[in-house]
Amino acid sequence: MIKTLLATILTEGIVVLSYCIWGKKPIQSILLTSISANLITQLLLWGILTFFFKQYLIALLVAEIFIWIIESLALYFVPANRLQFTEAISLSLGMNLVSFALGWMLPI
Image 1 (cartoon, rainbow, N blue to C red):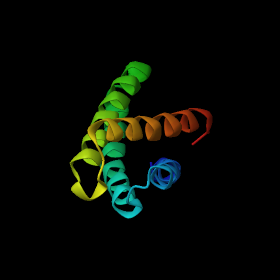
Image 2 (spheres, rainbow, N blue to C red):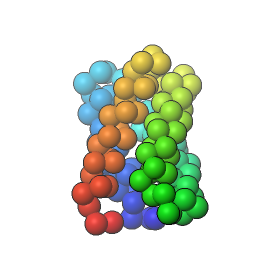
Image 3 (cartoon, rainbow, N blue to C red):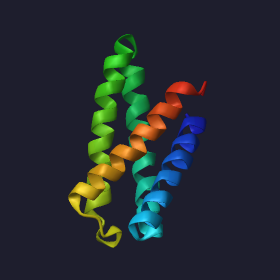
Image 4 (cartoon, rainbow, N blue to C red):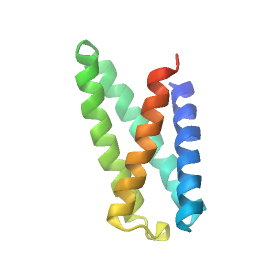
């Protein structure tokens, strides 16, 4: 679990940094929000996958959708992030698609 958490934070951190530089958004607050949200959502993900291991793919899909929503809300509701709701949703989607794709390919 530690390896996947670190890989997720690193991967999504790169997406956050790229987005912040491109969109001229505050890097520190968005990055800290992303890391904080990931600490919570990774625990949620591993709990769901452990509990519903027989329905792994369905559980993974449902969990990832909830993670996307949770992280979008976290990014949006931190005022220092200066993100519109659509920006928070888009950033969270990008972060999660990249980390999901990388996680699917890596043997972690």
